[in-house]
Image (spheres, rainbow, N blue to C red):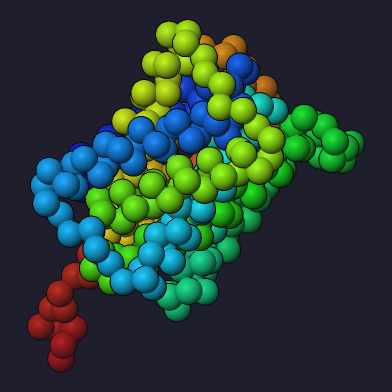
Length: 308
């Protein structure tokens, strides 16, 4: 019951954050917005951990992985995804990000030795075909300077980094590091890392006082960061990274619906085909066909005549 509730909440929250990011773009530099987002989230996480008197002291080696979590899950990946969304609609970015599922499976094999089932290759092939269909209009002319191709490259790059962050979370769980404490340190390091990046890149910490910006910032900080990451990492701990990654299959559905309603996104033939292929590939990857077959076609006990 707990896993089901966390699963639904994670899908709904992260599915809606792609649209919220749109309100962050324009006036304030994306990297500065991320500093604000993770500074607010880190403050809330630390306040909660201190009030609950959760242990926050860890070995130096663990802090290296907290930094890795910060760079991969809370820093570099979001930076690239914010940049990507300046070139794509929230729907397209979210669909491209759904390849996280396949990347998690491959990385789980590389880092933790988990076998890859044959169906994974079918799912990967469908997922790749889906991405090609989504961006076919730009791929067929192969102009790497086009808006869509730049957005796609940034989305895939950010997704690869996010997958490494997921593997870091798996490692931390194996070390019995609490999800909330790990996130508190990771978000604190992320805010610091992004602040340094802004200063070194010559950026400015400007701010937009409009209600749309402030409201989306608070939503992304509290719901999209503090709550959603806590829910997701608890799911990874409870049901494993592959099953937890199933959320990645569903939140593009939420993102596409919201993009159609609020951004005027139109599902053209190639984008509709791509969406279906990516969704189908992810479903195939996560469907345990042997267990499903055993459930639908249970083996009948042998009769006396058969045993003779």
